[in-house]
Length: 151
Image (cartoon, rainbow, N blue to C red):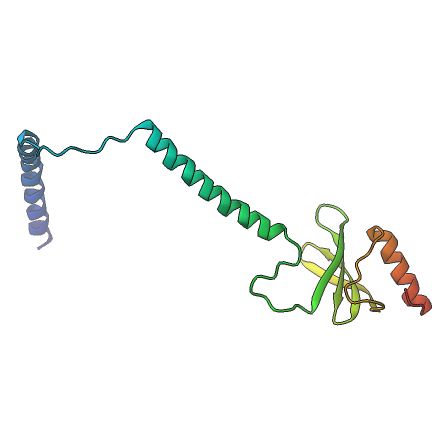
């Protein structure tokens, strides 16, 4: 039964191969109706192109701005985790100072793992941001937690 089906397919492909050029010649010889197509000039193309670039630029600029604005919480509730500061120690390692529910935590992060290095209770205002550089503020906080003094 398969050779018969292959023969039928072959015959149909031959017929269509010979009929297609005849049909194309007939269509080409037919006269097209007289319909005036609107002329599109260079000015119209430039206007559409500039408008498209402005819209795309606004979309990309808005997306970039949303990523750069600190505290952007689009659709997220109030998070109990706040990143206070972070410092890169190389290509793959970093120190991260976070505040979690009134507790300060110093995290060490490297490829594939994260470890809590030190914890101390929060003192002072909730929204306190370090004014000094990362290292000086971290040393001050750690000394205060070891001595039992408020910062």
